[in-house]
Length: 206
Image 1 (cartoon, rainbow, N blue to C red):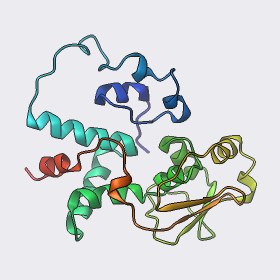
Image 2: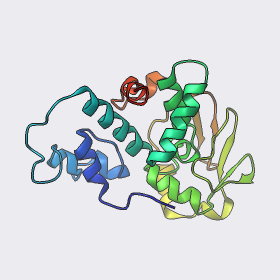
Image 3: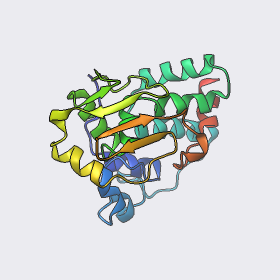
């Protein structure tokens, strides 16, 4: 399975904003973006040439990196969002938020989406009592995601659940029983990262 294996802190610096790719480290003063808030490389502090295409491309790259999706898969999500009723950009973000790895992260069962993706791949979760190890699995309203009995002693999961931060309104976490419920469709207003999805729509509409 193709995936990015480089230093993820470089991605935050490249996009000029925190993408929260390293979990708890992103909330401390060890965060690389806090210490070097400019693009990586020898020309990182140089003046950038502005253009509409650059803004659109950077926005697409930013969203891909937040959700850990590669180019071909991202395009498929966009095409599906474009066929759905409603606003294409909001549909796109909703589809990305309904990925199983993203839902696990939102519930607080992992400290980052990349950690959630790895835990899902390693068979630590069930959906409605059935084993699911596909990170891109689309979770539906009222689905129950639960940590397997044997996985509840895994340090990474236990620590994440105990220290779970505030969740968004569309998920609910039962810390005592290591399970959560996907209660409703994602709400655009609660996606607090600086995402301008309309720029992505403009890029793909050319």
